[in-house]
Image (cartoon, rainbow, N blue to C red; front, side, top):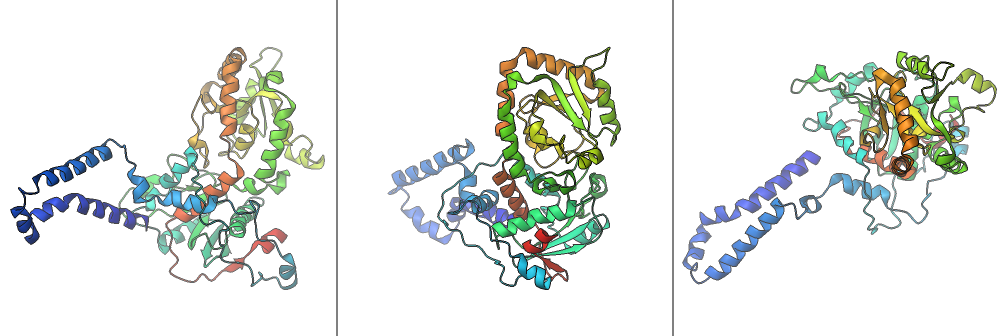
Length: 455
């Protein structure tokens, strides 16, 4: 659809610019040629105007996109218009589900804006532009049923949105409740904007590492399978989507992101940055990968102090004591926070960034949906993967010596964090731009908010 629109606009532009050439060879041009001398001054003014207009376009003084139309911006405006009640969501009615095990038939499938003439023009964060890059492999060909079926090999579930309803086909059990909370996030979008999400079909893999290797799909019409997951890398074509923990992580007692972010803002106020422990802090499971085990070698000992304070997180022990040591809002006590990947990317990234302390980020192998919008030494301090200890020690010493620069840097990072509305807009925009068509009626189970809520 977008490609057709672009071709139409290009065709109109070309027609507009070659019109004078076409008219010189038309029948009507002969009559105009007879009056050329009488209208020479007017003609000169007209051509001067068009010449000046062309110069303005070339100099980028006029934004063509403003007049050509921007699908992404228009879509974003639909979801960012503030209703009369900014927390509006259609209420849950679990009674019908509990009685009949079916979704209520009166659940809304359309939504009318309370302020359709809103002039709100939101500005997208940097990472929004990567939506187009992630969908680039299907820009020319679109997505076919055959491509979707290829992704079934590793997918945990298939999700279809059709006529304002969600259908799900489950293939296999995901790790913990990842699939459930991912579906819960999409169902919440339907509660907030019923009928606004387009008809689409997608496959979702809830495991960690990407599996769609780009090298296998370099030939024309090779048709890579569109597979959604939580992270990818530069060698893969997996489509990156916000991870399940934004909507909650039951197994670690983690609340939804909007609640966590509010708690962390309060936690940040307890201790000013200048009064925090002047070391780099990390807490996590070092047993999931070699690079985390290597990080533990940088911990303080009787012989060496690399300006770090590293702690092992034992989730089994935490569960027994009620997660008293795992509240992320209570971990903003050090001047610096370390982020290092696990088996793949780690959900801890957003909690570390939200701590209002400079993030010392060990070299990345994978990316989630928002980290690609971050700039080294502006939003985080890069740490060398092959020389972690010395790199961390230098970063802490430099930060403690240049406190004003550090304060400015980490406040810039904190302001650009993923706000809950931004997460909503990103998810909606991604689903709108996903170039999928449904030429058939899915034979799957319809799900709804009460069902997922009860689950």
